[in-house]
Length: 237
Image (tube, rainbow, N blue to C red; front, top):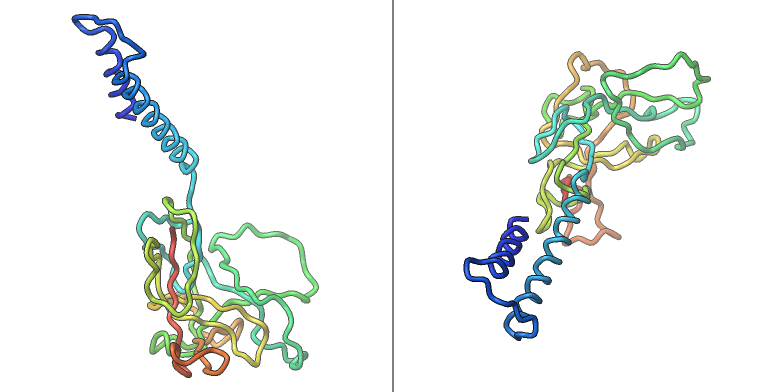
């Protein structure tokens, strides 16, 4: 925008200076300058348009295992509790259906008065191992929904603890999921330094999370190594 104002003042100075001179539009030098100014103004106009279009931009992601957002230019949308389906249904041990994804349930819900019939249930999530932290077993899992105000895309990269060039790291962790013999589950990137929900150290066995490890075979080794925990990183751009 400063360049546009400068160019405007420059044109006025040429046309209405202290010693006005006739501007010859067929002068090659003048024509070249006008052409350059038109190109510059066009570029500035396109840049301004991009800035206006991106004014409301932002990307969101869930930070599993934490109740805060700590990345650059991020804000907390809400924090709450990780929840999913029960790890195993005793009456249907040979069936592994139901939803596989976990939800980040807000800590300030707006409740209904509608009762269900128990065919679809939501349970709080628990760490089922001490791999993430020595005392993590049976602790309940918090979560935070975060928004980066200056990026447009966010992705989780398994097998990495750093982002590729041009991407900004939001947080890093280890890949977790449900047990392979239990109900369907999804892979999540659990923060490497997880928190616990206060008062949540009770073995309620809801939706259980385990650290995921690699298995060589169809997954080539190298570059991977058999039976090792998997890094993950959440990146924005």
